[in-house]
Image 1 (cartoon, rainbow, N blue to C red):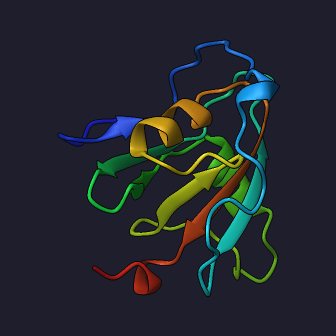
Image 2 (cartoon, rainbow, N blue to C red; image 1 turned 90 degrees about the vertical axis):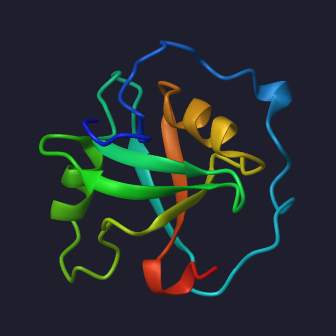
Image 3 (cartoon, rainbow, N blue to C red; image 1 turned 60 degrees about the vertical axis):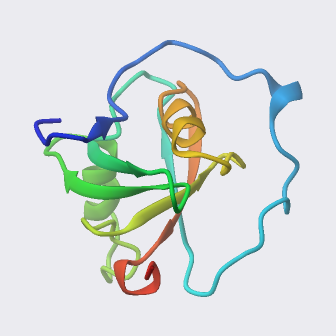
Length: 126
């Protein structure tokens, strides 16, 4: 947290998703250079990212990776650094949800395995 205008995916709502309300896979056109990471939030641990919603683009821009979060641990587990999450990357889908920043934030807060699709900063142009 800490950045004005940022949201955090830290808040644990303890909500399990309603499977019947999930979007069907393939409902969003794929973009070149997408990166997919998987993190387990089933224990309620925070993702450890601060992000700014971009209503125009319909995504979240990562502003900060916080120490001790699941994303920092994901980064540390990447031997070649190829799939490291960095500030400037954009969250474009979480577990099939992709239509708005509000949906992305809600999906990030669910306590389950999260499949997060990101675009590198250099691919997320206006």
